[in-house]
Image (cartoon, rainbow, N blue to C red; front, side):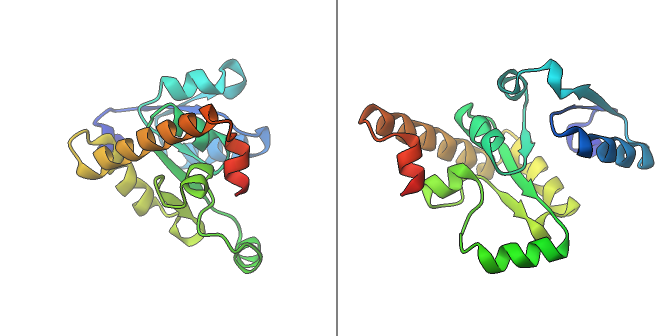
Length: 166
């Protein structure tokens, strides 16, 4: 991250379950990373997303919030190989993030399971933080189109929850 941003430290707002917070702090300490951790309970998730330049989140409402805020966003999720194997066999879906499911295309980069690797995460951070990168421009255009379509569908009384269930 330091190489991507050019900063000597990276400010990370960490909002997650307390059970994983300790593990992330330990990992940062093990890597001698200059990362500042904020207690997520001090912030409303929306204001954190609004003040961010880039959002990296597990699939769920945080990805949807970032997309609707028109923030560059990367969806990541990794789990143990047993859970991964079970999930791959049981879930027959193309996408895991709400915006991708609703759009039926990948508008949010999804780094799931074996694709959730540091090299790919760094690639997408560099891409989405570079304001001249055509992939960033395309990503933001897709987010704007997603938000516009979602709002227009809502105006036609087709609720987002109805669209997601279809």
